Length: 361
Image (cartoon, rainbow, N blue to C red; front, top):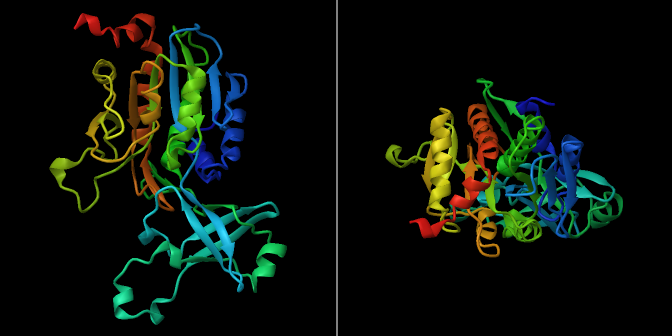
């Protein structure tokens, strides 16, 4: 088994924009071969049913395998690629960044550009460039070379080109797509570490597709699994950088797993929240809590399935998500892993049934 750092690097460097997540499915199959029975729903989400355990209760552990990226719209007569964002991007982060276009003929590197600052009016310099005014320069002399020789076609996926690296403090690592490859690495490591355990439940670890465009894979996956309870593994945008008030910070690097108490897409089951918090306290697992006033996760689809599914979101904080590069503290990752493993050990039938015993209030 790879170290946590190496596993994160492998998943981070792989490409998987919404609708093109095959590389991530392949890696999950490689790591969990022999540890899980692997299937897929018809949207492309990968379902890993842990070998061993009981038939119930069914515990869904979900992490999305897609990342924010782009698609080719068209190629200009001069050979520049116009593109469309897939997922949420802030145009401030895009200019002069490297990308890779995934074509049927192989990878094509490019650079995101726009009109040079030297040719902008003073008014234009003070405005954020609209993505519709940007292009990708692949070094083609014209449209024919870009399409016929390089193989670039409308609809081709475009991913950020970013190296994975340690910071000066090696406990912090930077790379692309920690949203949500950190969550994927977490469930891969959890199933690996639990391989020899006898669990009193059935664990279904799912890599969902197309979360960044509306949690579409979560909808089809939860319909197929019909879980009794769900843990959504995400990353949360850190709020510990300049510009945030200290008394409002809820996602600080190095302070452990973030347990989400609310976001606009889901109000979690309070008994489940208390169970998770008590587990963290019992084992001295570093954690922080968050009431998020914006954003959402796959939990928005999962908790509304059928008669309802008690669902919690657990997320290590990460800086600069939805950009070419993000920053993660390995302490937070490891504390989240500890919490996940212990929850899977403790979620037996009586515990899960008690989460929805509303007649006992």
